[in-house]
Amino acid sequence: MQLWRSLQRGPHEAGGAAGHVATVGGFDGIHLGHQVLIERTRELARARGLGTMLISFEPLPKEYFSPDEPVARLTSFRERWRILERGGPDIFWVLPFTARLRSLRAAEFTSLLVGAGVRHLVIGHDFRAAYRGEADAAWFQRQGPALGLDVEIVEPVCAQGERVGSGLIRHALQAGELDRAARLLGRAYSMRGRVVRGEQLGRKLGFPTANLQLSRRRAPLDGIFAVRVRGLDGEGGRARDGVASLGTRPTIGGTRPLLEAHVFDFSGDLYGREIEVEFVARLREERRFDRIEAMVEQMHLDAAAARALLGVRRTMETRELG
Image (tube, rainbow, N blue to C red; front, side, top):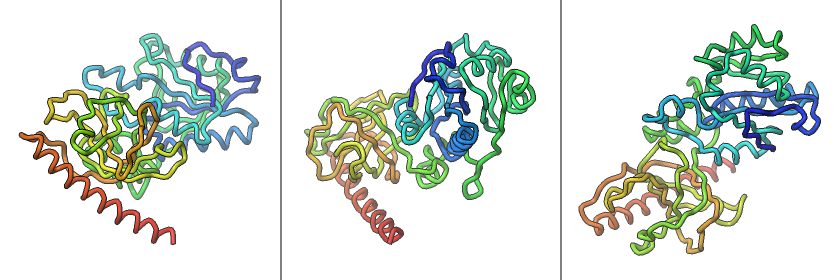
């Protein structure tokens, strides 16, 4: 998968391809609805002998337009890349969302895509682009062919009666409804990043943690969680059970959100390693304790609750597979 990160791209950079079938959007979360768009892009590309392209934005438009109240972001750039590289598009084109891009009129935005080799565009029914969102899905379907762009609109995707969308997933995560979020995503919700060196307070308290910076201005969930951690044995290794805290750590005067994962029965060095923390269940909200001793006591209770819950989940999953 190639990465493009500039507005100025031409078809010659696609390795001589005759053109691409592309889908465009924020793709925050890469949920079931996004996956339908991506799969339809693949189908059309195979039928037409073209390459595949996914076009997105950094920052996300909602982040750009609300700098003081940023939207809770489901996936960082790294997380989107890792999800997409598993059989993803030939090209991941990340357009820098700037004043220049947002000021493009509808025809100019379309010309930008066509100039980069896009021949067929697959978009969701609610997609909008260009200056003040003047180019909606109907506009693209109506005006696209005259500008050199065939367009297909994909209707809403539903999961168990709910219309899939990033906003609904954010709501489910904030409410601690992780199973519901997983249904809408098509996978368990997780965060990924490189382990950074922290203050090592957890190690001193008997709970060494792998600390991950969130790589987003606002996370979609907080609290204490039963988790599964991947990446300890290399990419593709088995998931290990653990308990994690996602928040500001008010008991020790923290102000910056941080994800701290304690992996059960593991003592290796993880600094600098990229790991993935999968959220299985929310145990409780983050609290401020008057004494460190009270916090440690609660940490033991949280770890025991996470072990029990994850053990039950594993038994249920084994039965389903059998």
